[in-house]
Amino acid sequence: MPTKSESIKLILESLSRTGGVRASAVISTNGLPIVNNIPESVDPNTFAAMLASMVGAAETALRALGSKNALDRVVSESKDVQVTAVKAGEDAILAIMTDPAVNWGLILLEARRSAEQIAQILKT
Amino acid sequence: MDDPLFGIGKLDSDLNGLPPKKIALFSASPSVGNEVFGYQMIHENLVKGKKVLLYLNRTSPQSYKTEMKEYNLPDNGNLVIIDSYSGITGIQPEQSKNIISVSNPYDRTEVKDKIETELKKGYDLFLLDSVSLLADFFDFEYAVSVVDVIKAAASSHNISAALLLTDWGYTSQQLDMISSRVNVQIDIKGIEKRVIFGQYFAIIKCDWIVGRKFSSALFKSVKPGGIKIYFPKILVTGPTDAGKTSFIHTACKDAVSVDRIGGTIALDHGNLDFEGYKADLFGTPGQERFDPLLKLLGGESIGVILIVDSSRPEQFPRAIEMLRKTETYGLPVVVVANKADLPGAISSDEIREKLHLDMSTPLVQTVAEDKTKIDPQNPTKLKIDGVRKALESLFDILI
Image 1 (cartoon, chains in turn brown, blue):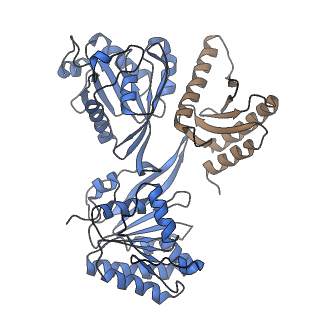
Image 2 (image 1 turned 90 degrees about the vertical axis):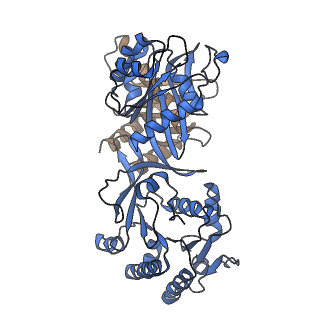
Image 3 (image 1 turned 120 degrees about the vertical axis):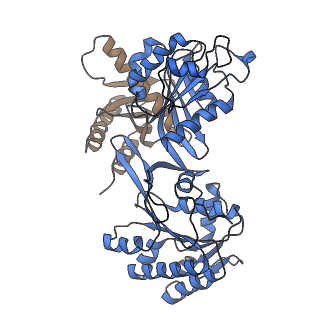
């Protein structure tokens, strides 16, 4: 039986075959890297810490504005990089780095599907 | 002469090295490599001037040495290798005075003879990489009989020996046959608990240390560097302007901060590489308006560095409150009393009293490296000895 990290790695690999996806990572909501598929030039620890705090800050901000639902996603964009973070269950976040000129709807769909699978794996 | 060492701080301090005539087993699950433990041990003992012999059937001597170099644990030219790999693949074995090639690796007698003859020549340390390949190549009983040969030779020639084994699903009876023949067993496994994914090693048994409980340790094998004990998360917290960011930037050379005009607004993060330990430091903002983020930043921490400004005791209740808000109250903590040289700074005894610290909690004073260079826009460099002392104290509690 594959280990949890192997199963998650497979999900990230299939995600990377979606057009425009450059890298992806699963991190804990507390900012620790779990499994990643990111270029070697990127430090996974720093990336995880920063992204988790973005998601945490966004959740806090939405709640302060009166949102009664869970956070759906956090998106940050620049001219050359776009990062989409979605919650994968209570304890984890799936982050996907894409080209800005990407089929955004498809990415969202794939992100949501992968996040659900990851949440399942982490729960078992 | 001292006993051979493992080259890994925690193992050496727990076990006091590997005495002669003793045999160590590194038993790893397939998802986790054990070979770096071998590199580390070989390198450590070569640089200490020990004679080391390696029986190698996992890869060629050439690529073994290349790997060692990549971990920055190079062979200094004195490593003697019994090459039982080249013969299987048909590669021309490398000819050199330190390489003894097994001409027919399929010959059960030759393999044992080569080991026995070579060990007679006098070595301090013998390594076998790997037992599992012997078992797969011949059969498990044969691998056990080789261990017996090693055990006898180690005992009559005063040699320390280490065996590397990867558990490809052997039965527990088979594993017991090896396990019962060794003096110390170290298991190397993967951990996947909730969201902590990592690797750890644990001393399962040791027959020369009695009455001591061993703890397991998370580790990372890093290139270059080798095996480092790893702490995934250490929290650095404390009131506004106490010096949290300065501490992290002094301790880690590649720290990253999210800040605006001198104050941290989201977090600081740094990878710490310190005397064989690796840790990720997470720094919190100090201002009250960021309190909703504190729980997130504190989650999953295993130790805390609490930083206070020695000259502002009125902030101390806030320091305690931050431990509560990060939900780290009760974790191992080291208090850093920063700015100990500023006018109005109170003594460490007074700080202890005001923070209600008992004597078992370490308190370390730190000061700026150069007070004339303090720039409110940027993290201040602290004097390194204070920072080192704080980290040492925390690792002492954690290990």
